Length: 514
Image 1 (tube, rainbow, N blue to C red):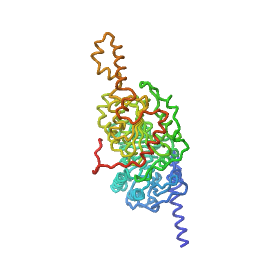
Image 2: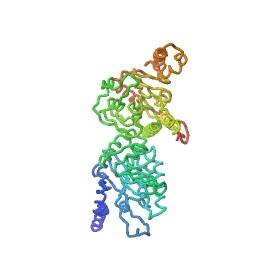
Image 3: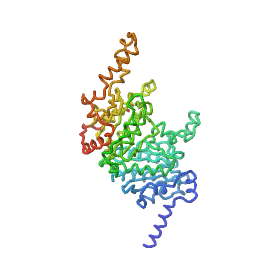
Image 4: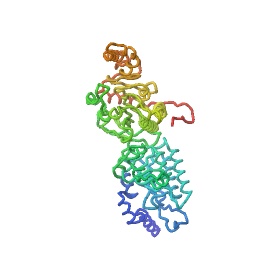
């Protein structure tokens, strides 16, 4: 027995060491950590329990019989992040370039099945070159099993994809099916067809980075929600995200310790937001003033900047914040903002995270490119997501709330539980200037002094239909509040709605606009 144990320890030591110093040096030369170094940063020290470390492929041909390393190029198991269990699998680029084969895929399937059975988050550290060509169609079938499990776990456990190297071909669809995607600049790329295929088919020459690098997916496509300069900061942010999420859809997010008083007045808000609706400001500064300790974990910071989405806490309770950003496109909703908001709202609803919407929206962005790009269809995604959400929903109207965009931004009429407004609110079909130009067009044109008459009618319209208490008088908002009391008002409201339970209609599933 002692001899067998010694043999076991030697084999396990060789497994932990990986394919050798030369391969490790090449990995480091690329600016990348090894698979076990990554796990050391991601997980609590000493918490990792590995599964199937002895797994080897059984492929033959093309010299594969002589290359049968332990782990088969993927390390899988469970560990802890801040004391909470997670399941993780990580590609080892030093073996077969991290390419997926039959045994490799079956290990991932095992990890995914265990994550769903145990009800814990699943984290994938992706650094692989796609399907293992030497194994043919069995490798492709392995991807099918991964996709199927991604969908089966969607909305059940948080799924986090961390892109630390190449992810090409069909492999790119697994991250797209998960809840959160992180990418590292300079080393991570995602694309369905690589530069060689692009040049062969179209004649266009393009680099890996320009085709599918972190900048592309963080600011153009919206595939990546988080972009980082290096692996360590990326993995540390993954740890932070996990601390804000429940382990599964049957739990609430864990409370976060804070010393920020619940009744703290937000005096800076009086100076941050101009009363003039035509003047811009930074909504991010408003969010930071309201939430606990000024900490706002923003999603998609580089994409669709006219809508801010992210997680924060109020009195230690995790909330999802959706807010128009007047500092970008005046806060108007467009195609990308609608997609960004819809995805974020659905994610919060799936994992029992209450929603707080801060509204300052002039409408949907006009233009032929928006109409031809399908703003009706894409805007409907945001509307659908809000209407379908059953978590506590609180709306705060900061300034403008015009037209259909007011309705879409979680108004009372589509199911918000509570709606509050600042005394700077303007809730109307459109702004007073535009409304006066339409309603009194002929009168203004016939006047001796059209500009004076226009100003008179604009003031009349604002005084009659756009004053701060018009919506409150009709029950469309629950209260007009002092901006300084926004934080305490939200915290008391969330406390009321903590046990909210919504009964859904019996159906297989909805059919949201695509």
